[in-house]
Image 1 (tube, rainbow, N blue to C red):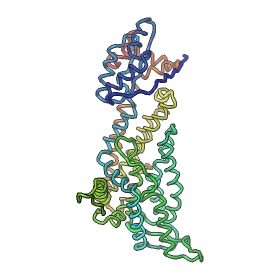
Image 2: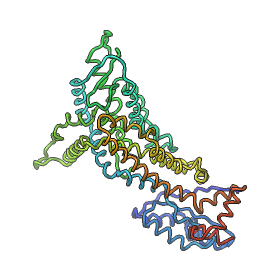
Image 3: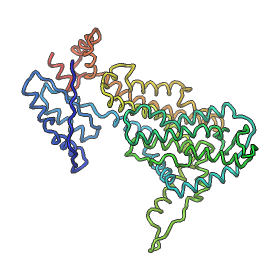
Image 4: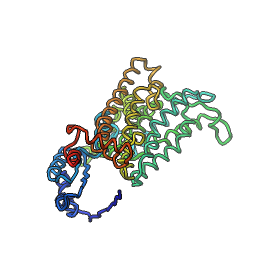
Length: 466
């Protein structure tokens, strides 16, 4: 079988509206030779011809109606899988609904918006310096093994989250390059952070186990150098801004996860971010200039509201564990979304879906199942270390049940909507092309399949030509 690919380049055009009907109409008129009407005429010219139409928009109701209308126009030798849609759109919908992203993204947006304002970031840096000078606890000797293990696990799931997920992408566009630069900046600062912040990070007091590493020009250990080094390591890792400038939004996919990972580490690591927030902004009020009418200008009113909102959220009792559960449970789907886009860009994605070893949806389901069945799985084993001893067994049980429920919901949605879908007809017909005993068996199964198991506009048309 010889497959030829032809790319059609059209000049840019402006859409009158952004709704689905206008987009479909624009696509039809952009290239008349590739329109549905021309496809129908081409198929009717010769009954021996076979055409396969592939249209995969998102699953909006208007797009579903448009696909069903197009399918009703196609003759018997034009095949169209009406049930297909953009897998990444569907995955994103599952993820946001299951983890409740709409309830969190506003809070994370408020925190990052304030961190992007230089004046307020400087105020937070001053608060950090004051906090460390006041409470830094120096302990002679090296770090404890359990403290280092907790720090390593937390860094891996938060600060290094983007670095681990970005390996699945293929396109080197501007946002991807920016994300990679951010990852490299943070990766370069992590060794210093681990060396200076090396006590139990769950204790809300900054500590440092010193082994003679903080010396001045005379070679003597001094508290001033220790304070300076601890502050520099915390600021270098971006816990109080300066590294990530991307403000998350619901319209920008996966933008919240990276920012939330940074914020979550700031909340967990000696509660540095919420405590500095309280010191820098007091009762969440900031001075603001007054216009000629005696009213505060809109921008500073907006900033004040975001500081107030972020302050309440950062200091809420449930924010830390809910943020960690959200981050840990969403890792498999975040990686899956990038891997699907990579396979789509690479081409021949259907071949990967037909093999269990390379099916990305099946691999994601297995990862989620491992997180549910194995309490010591890499993503979730950090929770007992953080909330097991100090918070009590009952609280830890609530957290683990919340994480397991989220993983179970995501695994079920991926399995039902993607694994089962791509294991059925008409996708199994791709195995016939390979030939051999497997191809013959699949062909026989298709011929003997009940009509209720076949879709109307693709499999039934092929089945009728036996």
